[in-house]
Amino acid sequence: MGQIVRYIQSYLHSDLTPGAAGNMFWALVYIMLVFVGLSVAVIAMNWLERKILAHMQVRLGPMRVGPHGLLQPIADAIKLLLKEDIMPAEADGLIFWVAPFVVVLAAFTVFVVVPFGPTHAITDMNIGILFMLGVSSLSVLGIVMAGWASNSHYPLIGALRSSAQMVSYEVAMGLAVVSAILMTSLNAEGTGTLSMIGIVQAQQAQHEWFIFKFFPLGLVAFFIFAVAMVAETNRAPFDLAEAESELTAGFHTEYSGFRWSLFFLAEYSAMIAVSSIAVTLWLGGWLRPFPNLLSNSTWDRVFSLFPGVTFLFFAAICFYNAARMPKHPLFRIQTVGLAGFGIVLGLIGVILFIPVVSIRVQDIFWFAAKVAGFMYMYIWYRGTFPRYRFDQLMQMGWKVLLPMGLGVLVLTASVALLQEKLWHP
Amino acid sequence: MLIGAILVITRKNPVHSALALIVTLLAQASIYLMLYAPFVAGVQIILYAGGIMVLFLFVIMLVSIDRSVKERQLNSQWIVGMIAATALGGLFIAVFMKGKNIFPEHALPVIENDNTQKVATMLYGQYMFAFEIASLLLLVAIIGAVVMAKKRI
Image 1 (cartoon, rainbow over the protein chains, first blue to last red):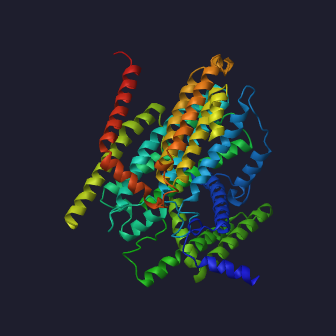
Image 2: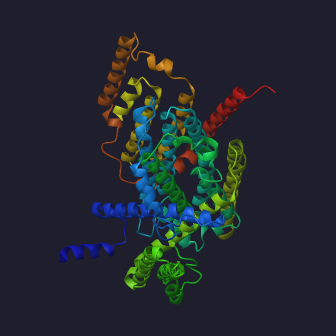
Image 3: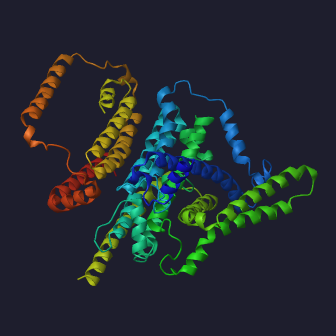
């Protein structure tokens, strides 16, 4: 028993990712943690999306299933598992069966290189960002397969439109990513890096998040990526291919039950994945706000209180709403449930104040908080913008974002060269 | 990779062939990884498996496949094909046996950390002309496609 504890402690003091240390067991533990965290995040996104959209539309959203609809995602999951599994008559059996797997595979494999902290990645490849872009482009294949294998008109047209849109916006995404990678090479040795952890460390070394670098070039590149990533994941306002009023759910029309939930899972995971790319490349990854400007130890202490304070804040909201519940006997179980959930959140908040835990969790918390901000923006876009027509969508991808991306790339390179020449002649 | 390649030529349904080709290209990317060239592997996945094959699948889906599904897979000239393939294989084996000293003795030293930098230095330095010519070729192809698909004004 003591040996196991010593083994765990020896690992917690290492400063390598499991991939770099070549340690299979810890790599598997990290993979399970990322998988569980991702599933919880997708479930939470389901609930959050319905509640936030509802509040933006001046209504309440799901309120009945659990207290304030908190058990709604679980009810949805049970419903989807119990639905009948239909396969269309003339459908191509093997491809119909494989398509959801390919999309889920592509969406989940991306998380192997996502950096939650300086050593908190499953592995840190030298070509991290290239790997992420490449594997997320494999999900297009899954969509094409799904649309074709359903052997009916709406899925086929939906799949073709979806994949054409995704391929076009991948080009704009790639250009924005290249101009951010360019900024990593502005260090003493003059070589950049493609590894995700290296990109955040470059931002730390250059004392500037890349979104603010060479103002406004970093901002424009970030903006191009932000628009392209919404189009890449087929989300509003670019969701013509899967909107209910247009194409009756597009490429996943003929899928029911568990297969449909796999597509759903893959869509939200892809959203979280491209948000992670944006956070790593432009927003400084796991760095807390003002890592270099306000860097003395009192500011460190203040910022290290944020994780615990956040969870205590959520717990306070739960208690407040539990107190506001109607005092009818039928609502007693909901009040008790909400209060219990508040107590759990409060306990997590208190645990996060312990210094030992707080040090390990800092980086993960800031990374997750930034990605959560992006998720909120996704829901905000869905509630605010009208849908693009397909030809307007393609026109914007090729005629607006691509020239902007090229321009930003050329300007970033020239400004970087000028900076090198002026400061190191 | 071999299984993927054999499936490409033996499947009747062209969509199945295209999917087997994707498997083959992914296996090719892993061969690049084993040769300590991670950058080339990544670019292979992005471009070939994620870009070119998607467009292949577009075209296959838009063309009716009923006719090709009913065709025989091995036509009447398979004897000549076998002879040609055996001759090519024999040539490869002869080159490998006789020219053993042009191949390196064992794997190159593990310097995969700067595969990207080395490729970039060579591509934009020594082989710049070939790079520009290749991009010009792609431009000509795009212009040709646009001209062929345009409506007459």
